[in-house]
Amino acid sequence: MLFAQIVALFVEWQTLAPPAAVNANAADVSLTSGATAAPDPNKPRPIPFTDVNPYGVNIFLQDEVEDYKKEQTMQQASALGIGWVKQQFPWDELEFSKGKFFDDRNNKDAWQKFDQIVALAETYHLRIIARLDRAPAWARPTGSSPGSPPSDNTDYANFVAAFVKHYRGRINFIQVWNEPNLTSEWSTGKAVDPAAYVALLKAAYLRVKQVDPNVAVLAAPLAMTTEQPTLRGNMEEMSYLSAMYAAGAAAYFDIMAANGYGLNDPPSTRAAFDRLNFERASLLRGVMAQNHDELKPIWFDEYGWNAAPDSIPPAQRIWGQVSREQQATYTVQGIEAAAQQWDWAGVFNIWYFRQVGNIPPTSAEYYFDMVNVDFTKEPVYRAVQVAASRWLVSGGGYHEALSGGLQPNVAWPLRFTPQASGGVYLQVPAAGATNPEKLRLTFVGNKLDLILYGDVGTLYPLLDGGTNGLAADLPHDANGPYIRSAANSISQTVTVVSGMSDQLPIQPHVLTLQAAEPGAAGGLNAYIVGAARSYVLFYTLTGGLALTMLVTLLYLRHSLKQATA
Image (cartoon, rainbow, N blue to C red; front, side):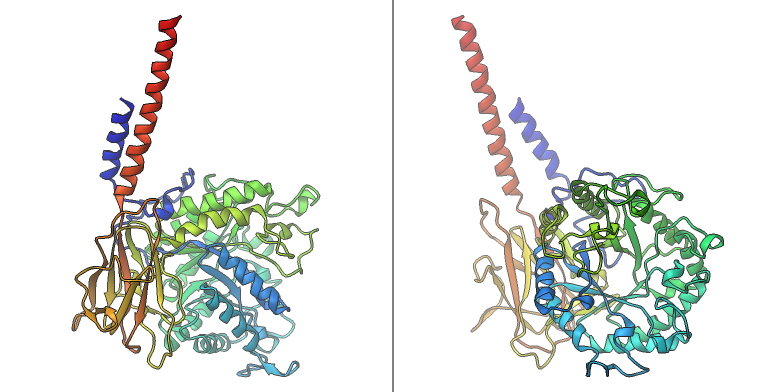
């Protein structure tokens, strides 16, 4: 009977869409606020920039002095299995006078320090989300605070344009300012001004798209607060976002950013306008829906729980208090559940990875850390490492160009177009590239289809370093099997892997693509993994048979005892 029930359950499972392997152990948490239909793993996402490895972290390498610590920070971040790092590029550390990107005091190029950070991210295959704020003294009103907006939005727009041009093809996601609904991040002593922020956002957005349309603009994350301007000048974030839309903001950002602190609540606690917690982001989503802007995602600029000890006075625990173990559990639960239930959620940048020693242990903010100043790993590091690493392997279903199974590779830059699935594809290496790094795709399954966009030239695939398992009908030349776009094709699906024999235990496979003709305009848009369900059948039937035999043996043993009593 037990064995028959197991088989029946397996048949029922076969009728369901196969979940991606990375989501097989999603947390048992229900996000009751803002819940939407779970993303269909077999179809393209309706909302761009959501088929991503959701794990990212905030880093502060602009403040790190020693090179080996920069390297170790990036290495440990990469070892987590994350896909993203959010890094601030302060305007006042780059443009020392109008149009001048040179540090006279230290007699060096102002870009030098930041070029090193970008190169490290590329070395460790991490995508950067760049935060651009902090106007230099020459660009803001005399006597104003560093967080104040510029006197002339054109100055900021020109800085952003210079940044985008300098890192063309290397940084594709920029955040315009930070928390403008707080006076401390906008104009100290004055009430915040949503319309003024929208004017800044518009100026930056238009210049970004003029310089490089392959850069996505994130609207500034709004701080979580219940305050209204009549108190201290700050503004509750839903009211602020509504005012932004009223000022025309919808046309001037690609991704909405939010903060998602849990404070004292677990991630499943419902959102409420008078309560600060993780699910509060769903209220921002509601404002987006009211303004018919549902086809944009929300990425989380800052996300996490604070593990301040009891030695921190209660009045200073402004981010709440949980244990180190709860911090680890909640961080993973929130991301995994949101990835399953919020089809509008994208990247979650955990606050924070490691600080450089400028936050003392007497401050509650010290206890957000995943890695301590001396690189000691906290429990949240290890919990995230287990969860995030699964996203680096794509399971059965449809996956887009930003998904975790595709390793970021500077030689294969992102290109944005509405014609591509998810609005983005990975372009084959540019003309003149010398021995460009192969594109690497990791998956679990026995079939793999690539969806190509435009002309990809000639691509040579290898599976696990060889040709075994590649589709038998791929054309061959002297260099081996190859892929070539059909003439005048915008989108083409090519089966690259098929007919592989099942492997037990299950092992991930790595497909690499080498571009033989750099300079083609097309690239890889998406891919479809065929799940090897026979693996599951094998383990289910074997486990069921073993359990049935055990029950039978126990029954026979019990019967024998009764017979001899």
